[in-house]
Image 1 (cartoon, rainbow, N blue to C red):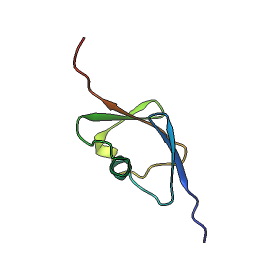
Image 2: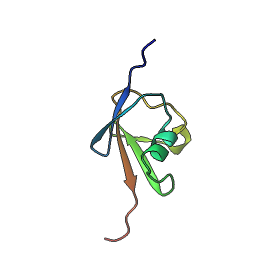
Image 3: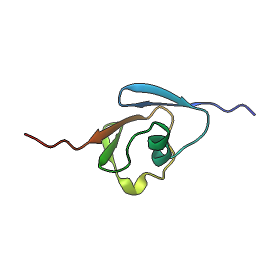
Image 4: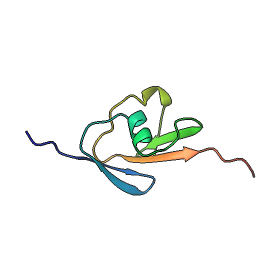
Length: 70
């Protein structure tokens, strides 16, 4: 059986993964922080309580960090 890669866009960059992974695993694989960030999937806030959900094909993911200042 052939595995179909999972293609996603993260912060404007396309990525392909050979195996299924969760949002939390995606962050680790891309060396992105898990603390102090918010995730948006296809423009909608993706709560931290759902980070153990498998990433879907074609998701557009934004990893947003809080910035101080004004």
